[in-house]
Amino acid sequence: MKVVLAGGSGSLGRRIAAAFSSDGHDVVILTRRPQGREVREVVWDGRSVGDWAAEIEGAVVVNLAGELVDRRATPEGIALLTASRVEPTRAIAQASKLASTPPVVLVQASTTAIYGDAGDAILDESAPVAEGPPQMAGVARAWEDAAREVRADRTVVLRTAIVLDTGTPALDRLVTLTRFGLGGRIASGRQWVSWIHIADFLRIVQRAVDDPSLDGVVHVSSPYPVTNRELMRSLRHALHRPPSPPTPAALVRVGAMFMRTDPALALLGRRAVPRKLLDAGFSFEFPRLDDALDDLLRPT
Image (cartoon, rainbow, N blue to C red; front, top):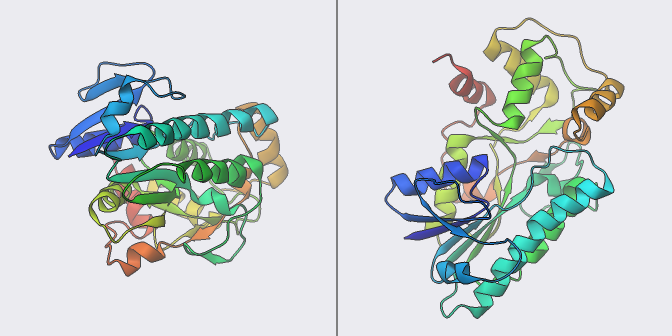
């Protein structure tokens, strides 16, 4: 099986490429800057159809292309996040329409942030998407809209929660804050955090490729989301740190300015559940946060 990865240079893309390659599949990474990886690399500009388009004929296409969301929510930042997702997706769509044999499956990345700040509502795949904030829901909506133009035998849109993995910005930042005594709840601590262990994330991507019954939007999240208060408590436990004072929302906003990030990433939340995966009988290896953190943060 040929697996073509757009956005294969990021942390999740590298993980997916390694997983499919180790299973003996022909993995191709579409990249602007070849880096001499162990899998095959094909140059594209992420905007227009070129010689790379031949690679997607009859292939599995996994589209992860997009800049990291960990940046300030300025108009320029939102425009960059949107363009870095929409332009490559439109290029794939154009190539798919010219292909003699369309991709057998499009696995399209998206995010549970498409629901904005959803409070305590339990969100499955039937939940309505939010109008904002633009850095979250707006970017995600534009990304998914572009993916609808891709011609493929089957399309699975993976609305993915925070992926917990070592050596990645999301978990590394939380670990650093906790180790430096800033592991208390953020603001009220009641905001919901949907999450997924990297091992389960990779198994879900594989399931999306292999299972013809999976179609449309699929939540990639643990069945047990937690509040921010619970998240920080679990981090302190995993890192053997004492209780810490809370971080007020105002301080988060000031700190975000210095760290050049979006405070909404910490202050807003959503309570997503993977209804389609559960109905399909998917068994999570790490459904509970404490077990996931123990596995990822255990000293080696």
